Length: 107
Length: 116
Image 1 (spheres, rainbow over the protein chains, first blue to last red):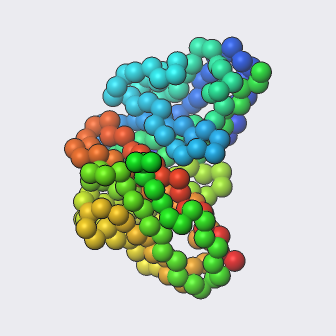
Image 2 (image 1 turned 180 degrees about the vertical axis):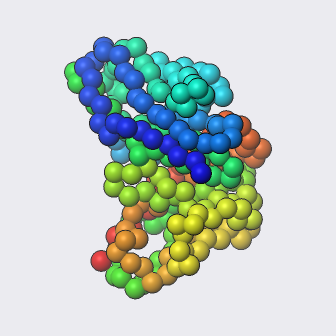
């Protein structure tokens, strides 16, 4: 079975503060992890994926197989980062999403 | 707009009625996914097509749910004898030919279903 856990429903930070959105997973195979974001009144869209090792909008995420984690980080939060963030795991044939974390950046 | 489209965007129906939703994926995307999302939850996988073949179906999908993708292009999701618990946002996503590791899914705007 594959499972994704996002322990925080809501994360509030001040503008300019560091952000870390937590994601832990359970999967017996070699995982493919993603972060998706949904801004207000917009559709769900890909933010980044672990295989690309990229930084998008200042966000990065490192796959830690030992801790089975894929936390999303940004050193300095911006107001426009306020959104719902979903961690997702692609296993064999299907994708499992976490319950999401709402990031609220306080001006 | 060349993104994934879904119709209708909203649907209100009475318990016991049948409803059908349509998803038009991005042109030439051979993979198509259906998800259901309820309040406070992430998207929940329902089913997946590669071209016209339905390759995976969630055990959560009861016999009242059926999906088709007859020509490998658009897809329909039908719910028979709707129940109040079916009220949710139904999301469609597609991904490009080849997929593979790091496959990106492109989501539609969703169809919000309310069963009275």
